[in-house]
Amino acid sequence: MHLAAREVSVRFGGLLAVDNVSIKLERGEILGLIGPNGAGKTTLVNVLSGFQRPHAGAIVINDRNCTALPRHGFPRAGVVRTFQAVRLFRGLTVSENVETGYVAQGLSRAQARRRAVDMLAELKLGDKAHRPAAGLSYGEERRVGLARALAVNPRFLLLDEPAAGLAAAEADELRRLIVEISSKYECGVLVIEHNMALVMNLCERIHVVDSGKTIATGTPAQIRSDSGVRRAYLGTSTRQ
Image 1 (tube, rainbow, N blue to C red):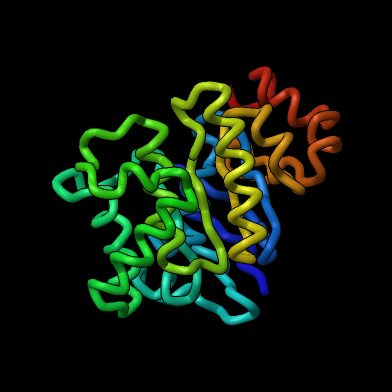
Image 2 (cartoon, helix red, strand yellow):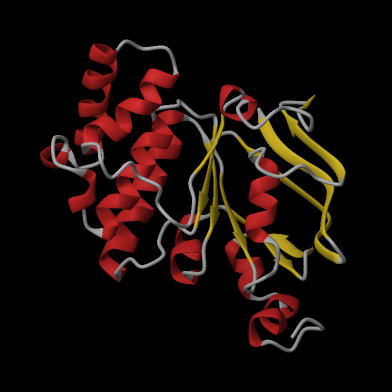
């Protein structure tokens, strides 16, 4: 099973934000998506998750063309994403935030509550279950966001800068957690991230974009040694 963008392009007025990009995420794989600021990474994830319709190309889930699916159709097809800014319901408890995902899947409130408590314990947030979400640390907020995404039982999980603002020890704990999630839930995980140490130690493959175009794909070792990638990150590519 896979999630793929095939020759996708996105325009915003005269700006070609994504230019004929193809990318494929297999179920069970951890794939990194990297590139300089403004390279088109978040736009591409928006397309893959149904938040942005491409102007050309197709989004395919397990060989089914899903380009025309409404936004709410993507989670039902197994595609779930998180955002750079964690969007918790601050007026609810931590558990209630996660319960919303289970209720959306058709569980009763009682069932959702039990599942949420179990999920939070798994993500080492069991002691925070009944506390207000507004009182969490930044790292805890990110783990609650992950728990809420996992409640939807994704086949593909798209994470937009999950380590942003985390200390080194927190980022390393996140790396271990993502590996466990991919294995336990048998889901493909796509990670947009600027923390190169995390990306290189986490991802099996890496896809690099610059100026909306793919400039490299490969293993961490291949990406590390790619001269085009080095030029893009040093600011000596055609995009300044």
